[in-house]
Length: 248
Image (cartoon, rainbow, N blue to C red):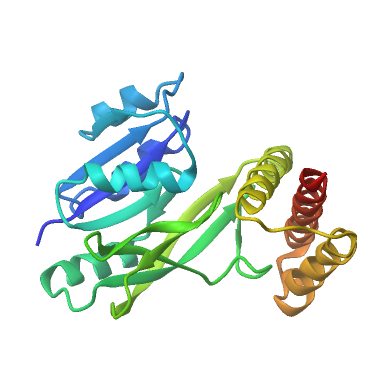
């Protein structure tokens, strides 16, 4: 079987080469759908042999589905630009290419936060379905937290190895993205008719922190775990506060 790898980008010169290099020998077709980057993303993609397509950004879900439509083959591997395949995961995908048994395959995602691999804090194992038959699945969910949704009756397998996620290089970058994602999520929820109350604003952030830091053992990740869990709580607070304001 042949496999297409699909990636969406916007100013990803810091990450995209690592992502593309990890696909060598695994993907038979690599397509990058870019939201008009102003850095060297295009030059890097073309130098690595990827097909590069520009398309205005309409949302994470919409952009990823656009990338699916550009794939040459029905079996696709969907990655973010800041992700890369571990060697074990590469080998797992190569085995599946020789013996495709399911409609979709999921994998664990291991995240690097400011130089430290995070094994707790609600971040691991972060199960992701990324290898699938595009004729039976597509991206759905609520922006910016998208997910692959397979049609009813589809079968799913699990792959060995981690999808390596190089998330944030600084706490400031994490805070900036958390604010942006909270705003996107609140608007998407509002568009779907969801509403927030002051109880959501007051209690959901505390529950989020308690879940990730205590039940998900964020304390075992040390100082990074404390920071990750605190910012997750802040993002929850910003999201519900924005959603409450959109009601008026």
